[in-house]
Image 1: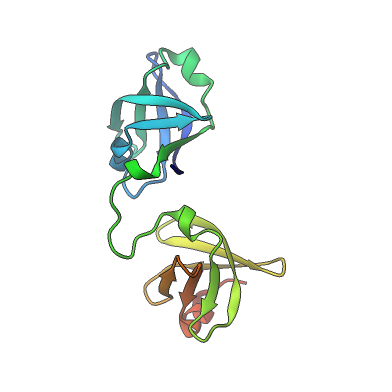
Image 2: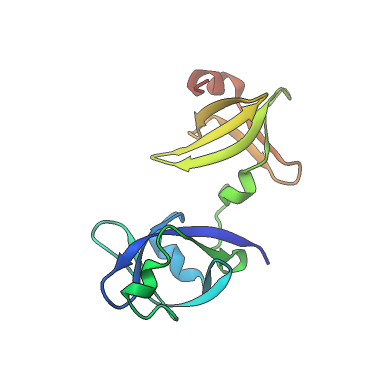
Length: 166
């Protein structure tokens, strides 16, 4: 089984061991799909889940009884089993599957390797080639195809050249 990073602990919340977390899922509610979450490879069952007015998610986990215990998790990542994750729609991919792909044009020109994806209003991909970084938003028209079996991310060169930041 492989795991996905689904959230990061921001801080403890309240006195009962609840954790305020930043989720890396499409919607915070997707975290509820995971039966068990892992922090430092230790499994935890989700006892409670809510989304606050601030858009952050709040998790209560079995084995974290109070604020003092919760404080030890500040800054740690939360992982979940890939199999527990929500089903992906056509054209959706987990970030972990995109990282490491060769970014190429439709003509086969290698632009670099995908090394990072930041989720802003649209996903911002970072590719590297020969030590140089290129950033581009994954907006409509730039990504033509994701071929996981060939480990390639195919982009439209004309659109890429207009939006890429070197």
